[in-house]
Image (cartoon, rainbow, N blue to C red; front, side, top):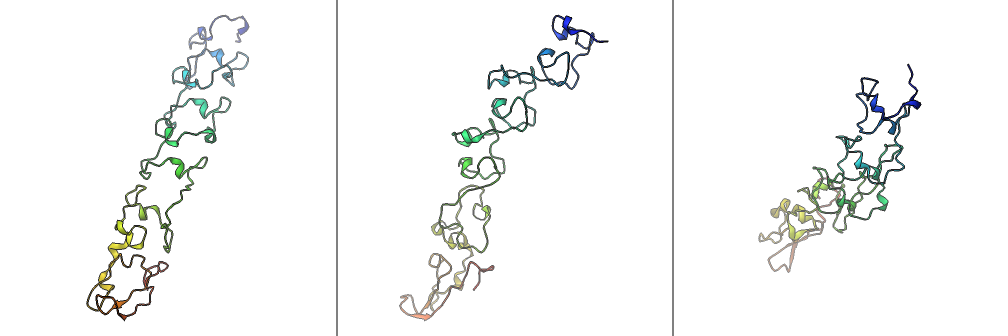
Length: 244
């Protein structure tokens, strides 16, 4: 049986109510609109709503989960309007053009408007753009400004080698020697292996802070006479075991 809809007056739901005629299927998109808003009687599918007349950035007035489908449960947290990232002709892929943005990243990436730092991220107050950039967020481009990094280590250091508290600050083991070998390795220094005089005076980590220079054993505390020359350097950072 075929009904000539040209003769029909009134709303579709007057008949398409699941009793007189088929109504919305159980898998229909959530919508409070009349059928003819998206469908036609000549071809029920494909269905498409004409967004041309819709005021930009007002998507949420319909896409609220009641009048039309809203944010799915697995959507990135955001309070932005749908058309900020989506188009009406092709919902995917979604992409926000960051090239026109001037506000700090955290003004949106705060886990409210958009995803912010993950729970495992290093704790810091620096803006995201310090290390990340659009469009490939996973590529880090942070550059250490300090001339003491990475020093002359034999191998590249991982972040946690220095950032032991998972912050952008470095808790130097010996703050007074920050920027030198002793800054991190003062606790490894063995004074007994570094005699300064024949009388038993020992060198301090501060005196040998760069770990590469020659040191001499003097005859007495006046340091006027070298009793035993030590040609050095005794330690080389290029040696895996840091031994001479």
